[in-house]
Every structure is written in C-alpha cells, then in structure tokens.
Length: 398
Ligand code: NAD
Ligand code: NA
Image (cartoon, rainbow, N blue to C red; front, side, top):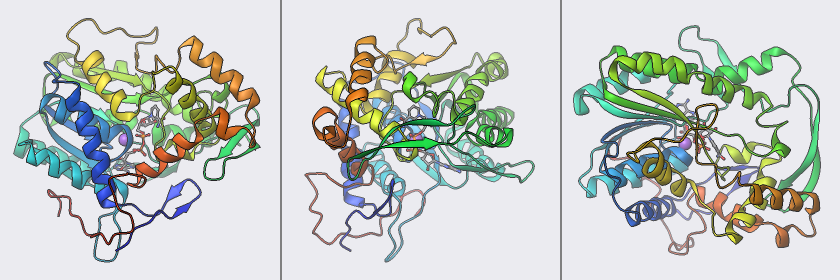
C-alpha cells in the first residue's frame, strides 16, 4: 500500500509503519547516546505506552537501563488493507528493537480503565516478571467507562468561570484567529473531566497491583502533569483539564500511604508542552507551542518527548541523590520551558503573532513536522512513494 498522510483537523487518519519504525529507532539512538542510567528501573509497566510521553518512557527504561517492559495501550491493529494506528506501529517497532537487543517486551492492547485489562496485566506480570519496580502512568483519553459503576464519562476542554478569548492557530494552514471558548455549563463538565483524566484510575491500578503482590520493594510510580504559562491558564491549568491535573496530583499522598510498607513512592512529573496527539486537540496551545519551540531552539534548550523522559529517568527519578521537588511536591522537567527569559520572550511574541508573520516569528514549521512525525511521516530516510506492507504485527500480540 502507498501510505500518505490524510488529516481531518488535528487528527491524522493514516500512519506509516516504516516511518513509525524510524521514529522509534531515532529515539532509541538518542537514549543510547546518553549512556546507561545507573540503578535505573529493571521491570517496568507503562500504562499509555504507545505514543507521546508513554512510548518515550518505555524506550528510556528499556534502552537506558535494560528494563523488561510491559506496555498497555489502546490502539487499532494493522490488518490486510487496513492501516493500524501510529501507536500500533510504534509498538511493533519498539518490540522488534527490544527483542533484538535481548530485552523482554510484551504489550496488552485494550481499555486500561477496565478491571479486565488490569487483571490481564497482573497475570502477565505474575507469569513473566514476578514483580515490577516502576509503573509509569501516561494515559491521555477523551473518555472513560468507570469499571465499578459502568458510567461513561466524557472529558471537556473548557474554561471554568468565564468565556476565554485568545489567539489560536490552524497549524496546517498557519492561519491565526481569535477563538472564544465558552465556560462550563455546570459542575458536571468539571466532574466528568476529573473522572477521565484525574487520579482515580491511577489509584485503582496501584491498589490492584499491590493487592496482587506484584509490586517490588522500593517500587516507584510516576504520572504526568502540565502547568504552562499564564496565557493558557483559562483553557489549561485553571480550566477543566487543570482540575483533573489537580486531582491527579492530589492522589500522590494517597499512593504514598499505600506504598509505605513497600518503601515505595509515587510522583507527579510536570512535563514540557510538546506536540502529541493529545496536545494538538487543545485550542490556543498549538500556537503557544510553536512560539515556545522557536524561543527554546534559538537558546539551544529545546527538548522533545524522548529528551524529556530520558532526563526524567537519568537526572530525576534515578539520579541517586536527593530529588528536588517543587513546593507542591512535584518533579519539574518543565524547568527550561518555565525559565523566566523563555516565558518573557514567548509572551512578547504572543502579542505580535498574526497569520502574516507566523512563519517568521514562530516555529510553526517545526510544529507541523513534529505532528506528521507522530504518524510516521516526514522522515528523510523513508520513501513515501514506495509500496509498503501495512500488516505489521506487534510481536507479543500478533
Ligand atoms: P498521547 O495521546 O500521545 O498518549 C496517550 C496514550 O494513552 C497512548 O498510548 C494511548 O494508546 C493511551 N490510551 C488512551 N486511552 C486509553 C485507554 N482507554 N486504555 C489504554 N490506553 C489508552 O498523549 P501524551 O501527550 O503523551 O500524554 C500522556 C500524559 O502526559 C497525559 O497525562 C498528558 O496530560 C501528559 N502531558 C502531556 C503534555 C503535552 O504537551 N503533550 C505535557 C505535559 C504532560
Ligand atoms: Na503517552
């Protein structure tokens, strides 16, 4: 099949298996180039393991400290005449590379919010690894079916107290317009978003893993959060998704209590704003990211998901000395994004940004490139005119 990008808004409907494999190889090479992470994780469960920060975490663990990894995700498999999703192809490539390097890697494709997938995961840990010493929680989903009640929740991306008007960009066309996003209509919008993206499911995972006896002494677990600049507060940190992140962060003390007798610990890591399938769906944020990229690249401090996760593992979670946390107890790998000089320059560019000057003052080209690379496109190494086999199995799934 000849596979070309086909987009609908911020969604890409196609994915390229060889391009995805190239993306994975590049990330593996980066982690290898940084050297081994001394005393890094050895047996790792990644929940949300197929794209974005999750696959970068899996690669950082596997190729940074030779970890055995189990990955859980929700992706569409590749079948004859039907493309798989990017995360499917990412995982197919990851497992192939991991196995070639002699590393254990198996995956489970299904709804991580369900009791059934939790049980399947626990059974696999028991069968193959005995216990895990790190659990990465990197889910991003627009909906969740609650495993105990069957209630279906849909998250919303809305401000809370009042309508929010600001600039936004269509990153395909580069057209900058004003957008007004109406606030939540009721508490339910907030509660639903917290039910999907808050900490309850993370807690359910850790409770179930602990009850099954599959958590190792000294176990760590980490989930990912975001803060960002004031200009996105109304839609992000002070909006519905921010309430969910507050809830996720507030789960840490509960998990620490639960893990105490194992000398275990839980963390939230606040990560940098990056182009992923999830972040491209948030209004206003893509324009901010394209300005941020411009400023951070000019300063030589830009990082992608793999640089972020490698640094989280090597310099934060497993750096062997005292971990620096912020006043709310969070790990900060958004430190470079939030640097005062960076934020000042981004804020100044934000004021100026128009359709006419966008290509010049922002890195919208870099944004676009990253977006297409999420789906395996825009890699120089790949000939996109060439016929390629769309049926690429994930070795452990088939
Ligand atoms: P992503 O969309 O790339 O990854 C989401 C992952 O969750 C995928 O592996 C997907 O398969 C999996 N998933 C979704 N629903 C699932 C389900 N029901 N069952 C099993 N797996 C499911 O998103 P991302 O940007 O890497 O986000 C991961 C985390 O990082 C989120 O908590 C997000 O808020 C956080 N974060 C993102 C950014 C950013 O700028 N992208 C910044 C800071 C923090
Ligand atoms: Na992820």
